[in-house]
Amino acid sequence: MRETTLCFPMREGRDAGTEVLLIEKRRGLGEGWYNGPGGKLEAGETPRECAVRETREEVGLEVEASALEKAGELSFLLDGEKHTFCHVYRTRSFAGEATASAEAYPEWVAIDEVPYEQMWDDDHLWLPGVLEGETVAGEFRFEGGRPLDEADFVGHDLEWNVSFAADRE
Image 1 (cartoon, one colour):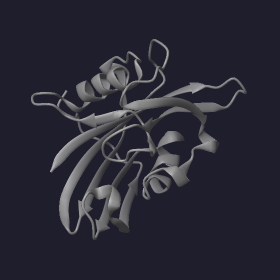
Image 2: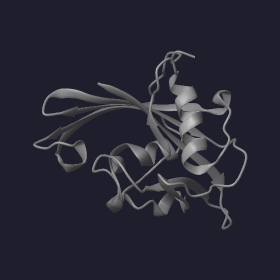
Image 3: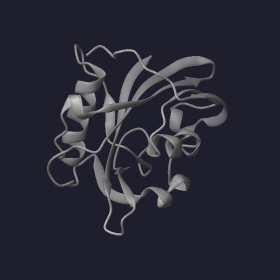
Image 4: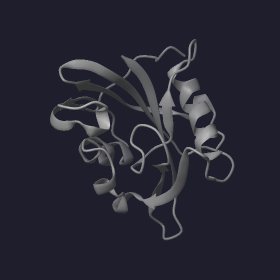
């Protein structure tokens, strides 16, 4: 099972509404879809360190690990087997301007205009709550395909307002 992170930088938008930084994936799993910056943990790396590194590599924003707020823990099963465990963070504290990379094209989006139709099938179930400040633990089940982005979404379980233990700081 692979362990990954997602990071959702947020800011007050020009029209007084909250915006979230999403990326359009340019390659790899989920290519062409929107999500937050993130990726796989490297050997010896904590989830927070991974979120900081991936956000810097994908969009050029500098985030301090201590500024990340744990917002979710998501498990993804493919054909009944554990596939991915994802640590989800959000932050309103970062430095720099979001810039495109070979892996991602960043875009600030109002939280009420998030393009869920261009995201993973499960994102509309948990991401709105995370963007509103809630915490979530979830399990999402996919079947009938490899890789995961070609499988069918078949079910889920969610628990809201979860408290998380320290995640290997």
